[in-house]
Image (tube, rainbow, N blue to C red; front, side, top):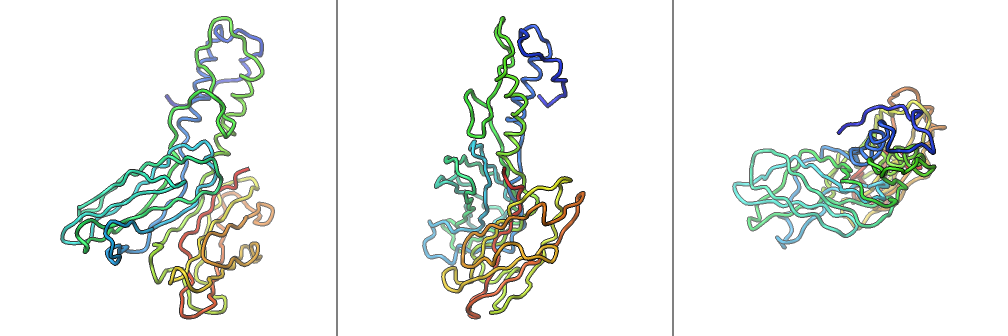
Length: 325
């Protein structure tokens, strides 16, 4: 059932809940907020085909894409949609998603026609800022490759159970026993529930994904001095000032040698300090700094350099989410 508006002023503390016809519907709305609020984590159109066939061990998965998961401390399901196909005359390619050391069930395709596959994985640790990895491999035919055209990841909740969640959310019985009176905790749950869900499932407002295995990238450079390699044009959706997380994964073409360094500018001001080294780096975009206006598109200038011109510095992932409070 979908959410429908009811006037909470019709509910008075101390009233007998079972005698108020609107009370079950308000409770149902409260519980539906938890169960029906899907949230986008990341989406992207990766650069060209990955080639796990280059790896001698055909049974070994290869990291392909990676992104961050802010919050979801209630550990609701992650559902990843991949739009992909096999590139080869025969064979099968495999994919899986990993978070918290837990692997999803793998999906496979042996079709040369593009199609969607759905991967579901359930996080297990209540930790903010976890990494999610999409991996691929080929089967017995070493010439098989997986071409992934697009990827989207969502938090997709299940049914809410009794008990207080890590987010603070707690359900309310839609059919209270006769004689039960509306008390302060009942009112607090209903008033706070939507906010608790929104804080635990911050939405993505911008993302870009590239193949982790690439030796060259659309956002890369071999320059040993800072060079502008791309500009993110971000349509910030909020009408009021708020903060955002900007997660960037810096990589090197060797995956081990070379030190990538990143510098960001927004509205003519540098965001934070230079980020250096292979791995994740998080910047804060402050509402007080970016001077947001209604749905204003703001460019973020991205500069990169490397400490060794033999290696390409690159950005594998860029992801902006509302900063969880």
